[in-house]
Image (cartoon, rainbow, N blue to C red):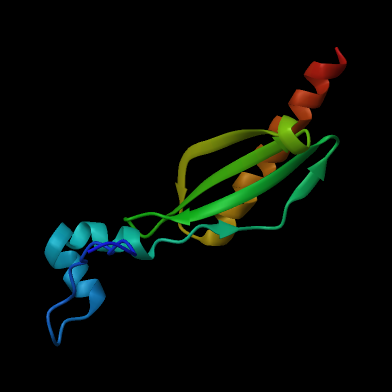
Length: 116
């Protein structure tokens, strides 16, 4: 038979089973948390020619990881530096503050480096 391609069959959860519990049956409960993990994108901060975007991600331990993206350039010449910080934090707000402080400091150091 010719015509439209047929989409491959997908495994469906058994009756009476939620998609989340079906996922944990297939891949283990540890991976189920990854399905629901969200990264909080905080407002971006302009630092000279750079834009610093702090990011906060909950970890498996219930603490928070901080990171920052420093963007420069425009269009096809856009460049992103991703900074992932080692400390873990008890609150989303402390992780956000750390990401902002260290992201802005790194961008400021890049400006100093360019001017010398």
